Length: 421
Ligand code: UD1
Image 1 (cartoon, helix red, strand yellow):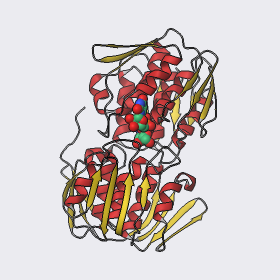
Image 2 (cartoon, helix red, strand yellow):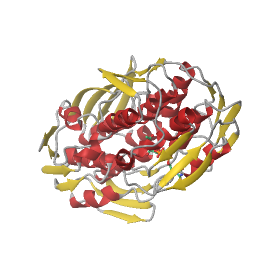
Image 3 (cartoon, protein in one colour):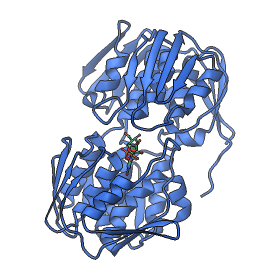
Image 4 (cartoon, protein in one colour):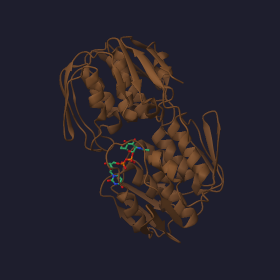
């Protein structure tokens, strides 16, 4: 997989953001839904898929397992079911979401061999909750030649208690349970909206799934699933990134496609004296004077503050005057962006899972490197509001989850271009 690595974003900060943005399907919904497409031999179509590299890489991974994936505009169709039982090492190394191959491979071929999944380096990201759950459904798990190997001729429904509401494990186990004989309950399940999209797709494919959005998911195993057409939820992290940028830069944006109910934890920090949020016919209109207020955040499973918005909010805190604090409880060592923000003049102290920001109301443009996807989004926000020019490298990380982020923000009046392609 050859990818452009030299791209840079050049940002001249200080412009207000004004205009309209349409939010498309969520990366974190589309990835497991594409994997679920492999559970059926019939075509499964997902509408409104984002054009981001994580989705392209997922399609490549499905292709490597014998499944055809086609795209027409924003619709993607998965066709042919899963024929392989080993994630290609090269792809698995760069994609955390290769872990979603576990359930389809196991269900369709009786075996799943998985190389260590990659993705952003934000903590250990183990897979024990996925594997413990599969074991409860009757899979035998071993380690062979550096691969995790799961085997099962048939799966049997069971009560599975998750020690932590892992999003990916909930999704993997939901998929596996559709093929298990009898009833499965996933207790202590994650409640993220993206899980509801997967549940909705599986139901449309003929599985009896219920309880999404609550801590107990139930599945009555249905055997082979049929084709279906389904839509992912809109990307709440993209929506929240745009709102945070407007809160820092000032301006007014009309956001179509976003669901206000998914944005509560972030909005509660962004809405202060100088901001206004209204909703007209499903369009969110957010206005800000560009003067952020200091705040505290503690990340946690949905509906708590999303860890994926921690870096963008840290950028926001730098532009507030006063002390703000962050506690990261989901992924240890998800603070690589703090050192980059410091290059722009930020005063941030990191101690274990805490970060304290001494906001001085401004940052200065600098050369910085996106350390991971959401850290990169935080740096873009910082650069949009900073004085002078910033050059951001590591753009490949940002492209994993945002569609041409420079086009998104330049359409709102920001001075941001991509160079080096
Ligand atoms: C998903 C999202 C990611 C988001 C994260 C938390 C996708 C494709 N990615 O990642 O954007 O940041 O949820 O909202 O949807 N853990 C274990 N053992 C396991 C699984 C997880 O210890 O078997 C731990 C992880 O190390 C982490 C925590 O649980 O500390 C949360 O991980 P999880 O909810 O699984 O996140 P992902 O599904 O990887």
